[in-house]
Length: 474
Image 1 (cartoon, helix red, strand yellow):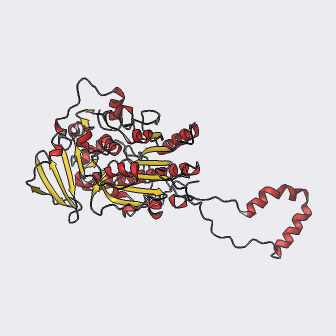
Image 2 (cartoon, helix red, strand yellow):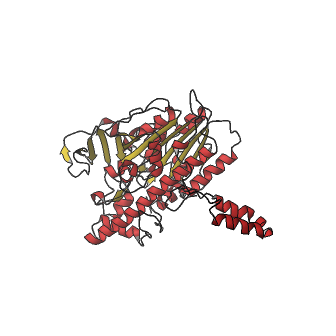
Image 3 (cartoon, helix red, strand yellow):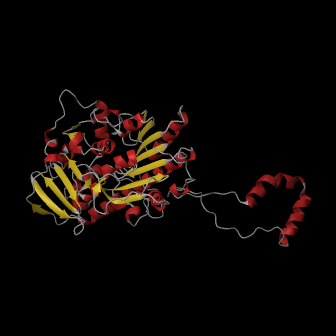
């Protein structure tokens, strides 16, 4: 069982409880024996030794039993995206709150990990398209186009298609409804999530269980993609009983408060209280994603699907702004709270050590970790196109700009509307001292701005509904 805090506990039946449960009827039929036992217990005979502290069941990657050697590919490959989870808010990355105990269990079990991966964009569709194809955004061109979306073109081969070609069953269950047929992101998936609304993490795990139960060819290897969404707005309230957080209700009129904060209409005290409140909601969402990821891991392990080898890769599609730079949410800038995410790789049996760079690198490397179990460097570059919804509600303060970013070691260069800025992330991790430089836009970026969504291909109605439901349009 699990408490609300997500800590796994074992509620074991003690010997005394077994005695009371199983032999009580016998005592009722023979009361004289009860008297005799009572006398013996009074003399100290038969008393139980001092109980040892109960420990919970073994949990996490460190508890997976030895698996058989798989000469080419493991029988189970899992790629999980923790939606909207920034590295700065993970205890695995040094954050002061215990937000990621399952990810920490992977690290403790020998996983390769980093908190300096950089996403290729600031929101779901372009980042997932890059993760699934191994290509940067300026190559696949799937992104927001005004009020609509340019889906991933069918010419691109996805991870699911690659694994299907290897004989794997492919399962894609995403709490984020953008990862769907309408966005082109589920090409190659044998099973795709049910429904267009967002799913709770427990529903993702439940659907995974149903799919596993219904498989007809259980001898086939399995590729699983999972997306968890609790860290994305709208968040869940924090219930009472979470030891490291006070209970928090959802805020009334939060959308209006968001615009007030960004536009500077809040007083200092109100703004501080607002950021503290949504920060708690966000941290709880990160914690829930970690917990449900752990539950999915346990489900796959309990079903025996790791016996033929397992590869597990976890990252995030983007982070979140929680007041940094006077901004909130994501999808409109390429500041570090948006782009810096975790990357975790764990495989059993191991196929050789994986080492991530100490300086920023592209999270698109997850593509090669999933497909081949090895780290392949990908140029760390990111794209973010204008966001009309935010531009409208902030009077053009944010949302009108086209952003490009490139990381070279700790040096980050940002291009915004023709101006280039450079930041030394080691010396200036908060990006408070960006300096103008005379550096032309890299040629790789120059083509994406001109790519428009064909008028003959209107955005499907379900995609428009998802845009509205997730706060990207109205």
